[in-house]
Image 1 (cartoon, rainbow, N blue to C red):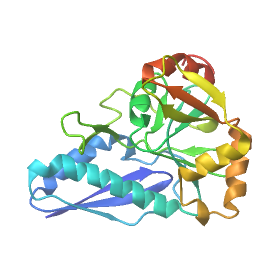
Image 2: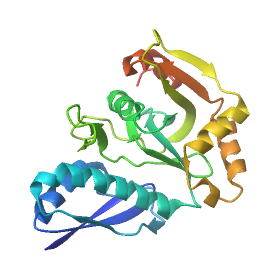
Image 3: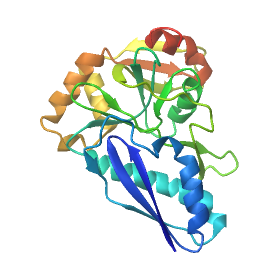
Image 4: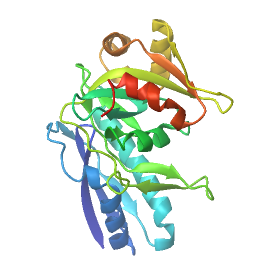
Length: 255
């Protein structure tokens, strides 16, 4: 038994080919989790990623298979856009009226998904994982399911649809307008914001980029992006709730 689901994100399409004894429930779960990526976003797609193979024989392994499939889809889309988009490991939301977008950069496990889930209640959800931008700073949305860690099983994430979570849809033309480096510090008593020197920002964003070397003049591309969206800020905080006022101000006020 084999079923195919076509997903869209980062300006690409990708086929997920499900197989195995439990292919049908896998396909159903993928369709629900990836609800925002079932149709193109209207900006046009220039390429297709390599197909992703997802096999499930035991429904008891569904959560693990969904998590692995999300990771594999992300890698496939990044590979397809290598040399074309500037891509950083970040979450992003956008003001629903202006398209002004906030890109928050951090390694995995440091709060991007939690922040995306919180901000996406008031601002258009773009992604919680990989932000891809063209040379003009326009973001190609990747509204993947939010990957939420299980408290009782830290090694497993649940893939939750942004529709099921009530997150707002992305506006028609999101543009990367502000960039922040997240620095979660449980000891912080309040959110602290500081401007990051230009070269420090280049190095920090380069460390959190994907396939940067594949771009023509990669460091120039990164520097141009920082010039357009900068200055880059570093936000130290303990909990996502501490950032509400600061991030609202960066996005140009309440949505």
